[in-house]
Image 1 (cartoon, rainbow, N blue to C red):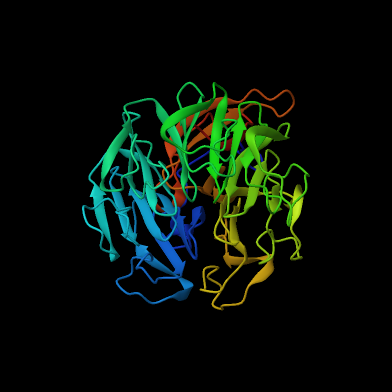
Image 2: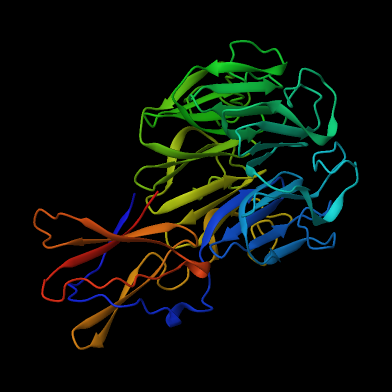
Length: 449
């Protein structure tokens, strides 16, 4: 949890001034990378897209590629995923899809591509993941559902038959999902890791190279996050350690073993980093992770510059790309995205179809800013109002809860919560309580669960 402190002492807090931020640019809060296109969300719930649109995956009603971000949905989007198709969730729990549908991965009962978003499930969806030609989602009751290609058993339904309608795979207790090219991963509420599908490179981590069409338990407990590349898998344990298995052809596992042209695949999870890893993402054949200090690290395939280290050299060990302030990441076909704490969006790697969104089709091996963070984001702005009164304005993430804390001193500070409010549309935060005017006190605003 990050704490934001006011830079001065405050005698009296009055209503927060919001006019300065009305209509201001919104921070980027989430990003998803498909094969050759990108989706991202702003704090106002708007959905933006760029890149390849051959199958209608941008959802803009055309099949035209674009190299600049375009808004598709104006508000209420809370999650995104993409491959050659695109998926998103709205605040009402509805699931929407567009793009490639040859295997029924859109789940709309057809095998027709579509260039406009269509509602697939009306409510209660809380998470979604996109594989090459498959879709996974979790409902509020913890049930796991899947649709699309099933040639390798990646749907986990005990068959190898594709389906163009969602089918339930697990009845309850599923809390996280990830989809690779042809394999699927999920975590249950007890922290156990489960996998199914293609396993030629050991990406299921079960000690074999055999495909399976039913979920099998890989790790019994303590798994907190998962990511699936094309043919490799990553997970984090509760102690912050990073683990990997599967294809290591380009060093994407980060274990320092031989890479191209030999490769050192593994069919059992191996520990890559011992602690402090908080977030992971997997591109086709590269891996990304964030540490507790906000630093961004990468390893694996880099011939398109997707690691962002200024070279085109593959690496078989994690290397630091950005030193701090990274809060979200996504790995695409051969490109990468990250979001910094100021709400800015950055990209590196292959840009053949405009997927970086920089207005060109030129690839890059160093991160470039695509969307700037708005002024004042993650900052407390103080305004003297006269009469001993001070106003605080704050821009955070829309819908996130923030707590106003008070302490009488910063020497052995004793922070006491005063109020908890959600940031509204646009991330504007408003506090209206009035403290004791006779006490010289200190204030801070912090995010809350």
